[in-house]
Image 1 (cartoon, rainbow, N blue to C red):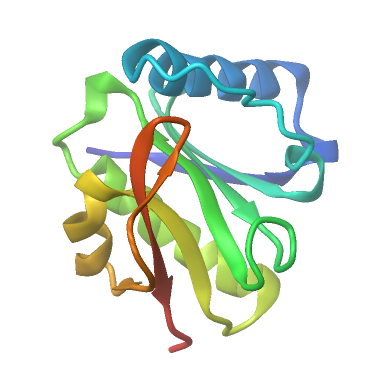
Image 2: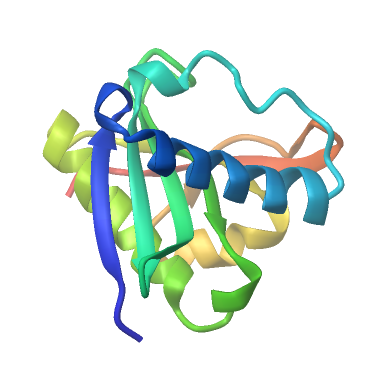
Length: 150
């Protein structure tokens, strides 16, 4: 499958891009996962936003987070793929682009994520190592993982 990636700082997002991002995040995290939480957490404004498009439709997204905002290290958060592209490799394409983007913006630094526990093997295959114990976030089991500098 062919995808088009786009990375923008919050202030450079068009209203349509921001709408698509928020719609996909709500569709996956709130509706599909039935997790009622405050998605608008005042972090987006300080982040870069990686969008993965297929045929001009946003199908996957990740938030590139500077060090000190979510974790001591730079991080990748709000990682999502729409139901229509799950199982097609879109998640791997998204995460490889997110890791590359994170290092382009912040340098060759460690990248920490708070992964949903069920996806631990997926992130491990991308080079992330478990760091710490499982914890609950918004009623969903998570584990912190770190990808070390190259």
